[in-house]
Image (cartoon, rainbow, N blue to C red):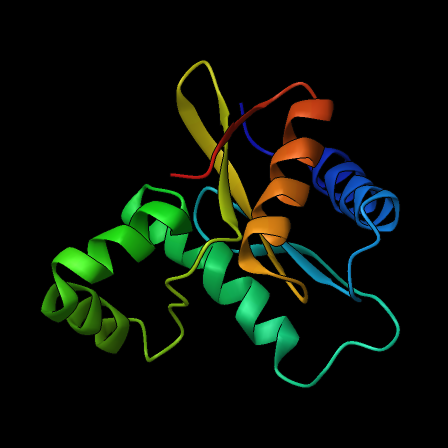
Length: 141
């Protein structure tokens, strides 16, 4: 099974809904497929510059390393040279902070959501809620 555009769009829309319920600052949501290719990018009004790149960096980093960006954040603390090297290989696009959550079904990675705009913990919570609401398993790290 692959992540469909319909599923990706539904989860991105749910992220905006949950962000409103949680009263988050304006967010940017990126949904990527299992190959790290962008499926959906939504930016709320009032987001700051580079938010699209940050959201994608969280999502694509999760795909690249097969772990949520919270786990990448913890790994950066333990093995900073490894994460710096991976980031160099990624052209500096890796964003190793919480907010990038893998989308799984039956243990298989189908894609990831990256959110930025509020605290990293709130970004991660919002992404996880949207993934679970769509019937998938969220894996933040």
